[in-house]
Length: 392
Length: 88
Image (cartoon, rainbow over all chains, first blue to last red; front, side, top):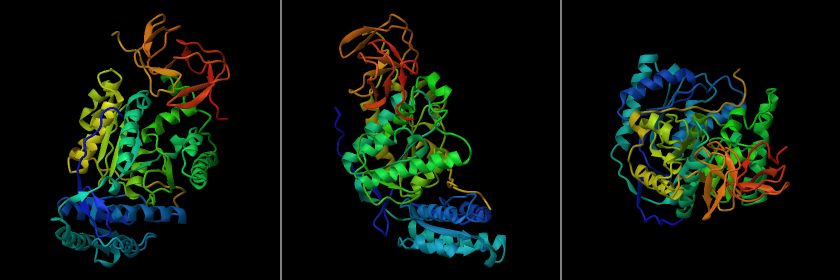
């Protein structure tokens, strides 16, 4: 790296469990789809409150119910959340009291209510609003304190990719990732479907045999799930469109994706929405679906996501800023109201990979310290839980 | 300096990415040497920046992306016609 980045100070919200948030939200969490509307109305009544409506929480097999619980709990436990109100229906699989207790283990203020025990829809909204306001008062005046890069977990994502993703945006994010590692941050690489074909390369970078085996396991499991549906994932990969665009082999396609994680060794492989125990580069088993993937990483504790794209996509999260990096100058101009950084300048020759990496790094520092991303300003707030099996 | 046609992602690579349509016979520069494109190579595709013998590794991102299925010379278009993936 030619350009040394000057030392910077980061400030976040210190939580009772010692984690640092870079945002300070009250989160309203429906345990089940049936509680979505009550949760939404509660959030509407409280300034700055966020809500995560979803389609899950009941009529699910155990692995799905556990994954839904883990994701919802992970959002409540994410340090960007200062406190939470859990809204349950009553008869669902994911129980409000249990979820509230899990989040409360962080020491943060958490309340819950059950719609079937709260006297109807309107009363539930009123009760939830009171509970939410009570927590809002506790967290609204929290001040930022100095935090370190070691307190930071960054989710890496790519979506709406095109030929430029592997040339400009992902190499630039890869170089930025190496800067974050040097400072001690943890980064999470996800999208198991995109790792297929390059898993042997990541396995060589695994810190030990156990991590390599786990990586192999999540890739094989993803392939098996696809085969069990009676279709092939590798047969048509790279796709005819990829080949027209210049991609020759599946290794090349996958490398273009994983290059955004830089050159560090892989410390750990975690399940969807599971919190990593190690610092450094971690791989999380998520699907390629952008919203499910970033939701999994944020549930795992990421306070910030950095998202590369070629075509552009307005993905955002209710509780974590998502910095958008577009590798294609022409497309950047088309959709610049939701892209933060134009890495297409690498392709037209006006910036180097290192310069864009420096811009990503500097922007991340500003966003950590409170600057809003384009999608935060626009209020783009998507949330989705990855589903494994059928709905019953 | 002439318009930049190619971009080298990693110093270990023996192929570079074409970032502006490279006409047949066009001159492109790499490591202070000039070479000639042997055929038209479109944006996003790869050009050989080293001679790669049949059976040798094709390297991009500093990693092996496949194996040459025929002898490839500097300036050749590198794609599905002369490279195959290593993964079954």
